[in-house]
Image 1 (cartoon, helix red, strand yellow):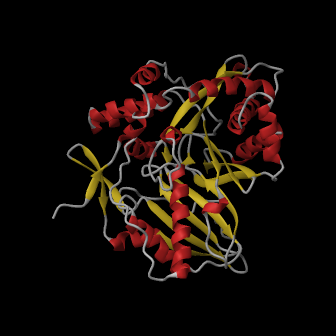
Image 2: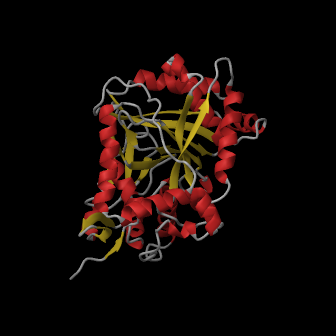
Image 3: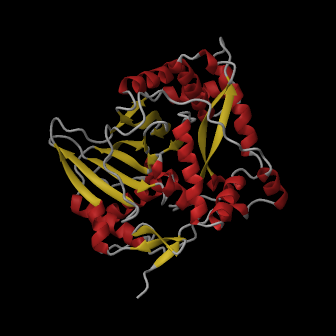
Length: 429
């Protein structure tokens, strides 16, 4: 009997192959005001995975084709865990709740961390090869919805979604032929010009560092951005670049192009609100500016805003879709060669532009565990990077902005990471 499976689209494959330069597991971390019903939460998690064949599958390759292939229930039941946290133990959000092995499956996981006398910490995880952050948020929202409905009706079963369309080509259908040609002709060559400082290349101990700002900071950042025709995202990117320049303390970073990769969700082109979109529909764009000595945050914000406004017009993202599709059409061997070239490049130079991803608002209205329990805070925990890769993320919960990064301590200095976050804190309004 042939296995039940569906082809993996190019965006999935590329995000799986990125495991050579970082661990692609992402998490949402929820702090609860009490204890969750662990058996009901376990049942909800299993039902969610059973309702979506991609979430109850493993990634596999056969005869030059990549697939998502269903796995038996007993295998994905192991993706749920309950941990007892003793006094000296580290737990999320300070450390990752675990890592997802997409090759054995499933690509998602959930866990409860329980300490005596405290509310539970609940984490929901997904491998970036299966979905971007938007999809992780949708997955967690569905999980809490099923948990709540099981409390109302123990026989509740969510709708089975089947093998739905996950290919990014549906974005291209929203553009005219002229728009696609214009985007395809844009120069997207990437030059790695700098790198977040590290002590050595190699692996270390996974850690998270973050800052959760008081609620009054976000309105201040918004108001500051408006003065320069900029968004919160623009302000954060500008602060990121200036903070890294200050941390590096290298005169060559001034009066020269320096920047970060910034992620963008292409769902904006679909012109509809997706109730459920567990898939990869995000791309990364390089945002570079020239910082001049004596200029302040507002000057950098204005420069960033000029770039991002231009990027949002036209067939934004079409180039990436076509590039990945054409490369995959050449075969998985061509994809592997592409990644091997990237990796070999880091053997000859340690430069790698840092990355920024603004998750945006984690809507508290989308996570309702029921009347008996409340969520005090939700925090996004990004992928874990090791040198030369570095990623900073931002997310917002109930009006409170936070910034966070996942790194491996040892090659990266915890002291340098904390200093970097302190600089951003000082730069932001």
